[in-house]
Image (cartoon, rainbow, N blue to C red; front, side, top):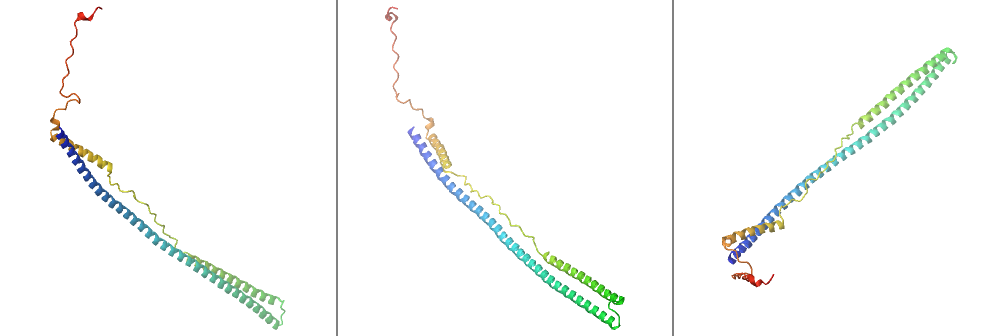
Length: 245
């Protein structure tokens, strides 16, 4: 009986140790594989974020270049319009001054002509000539104003055409959405290893105990009884010795 127990216990210990060592090796392999997967996940996440950051830097550069170009076009449009308006007004003022001088010169020439012919400056002929000259001057001034109005309109059109060259099609920045950053589970634990080793050792111990014949031996006697038999019960006394009732 003790031999079977010793065999069973030895095989249980060996099975438990073998299972524990195997579980530890498997645990180390699983941990190493989990570490590699975790590093691969982190590297992929880093590469993805780096790509988004690089794209956003290029987008910012392009948007800044467009903003600078737009600002330059605005400055150019304002400068050209200002110069055109200044020179246009100067030309208009000079033209008006010339027309006024010409009108005055023509009026003086007409009066001199009328006076040289012995006619009064207040005569109907003189007044008719003066009215004709003044009417022509008014017509010329009206035409000059129309011409200047058209020039001003052309200046505004050129200004708007320059501004229309601006590009406001700015590209939006890309948004980085974080992926799966959870830790990779190795699916092993010390408690599970010990429990598995215990089950393996118990199975090996039972197999060793059975191989040593432990299950085929008679069960041991109860503790403290040994090989002694119980004494027979004492005989009962005769009825006559029981005494009176």
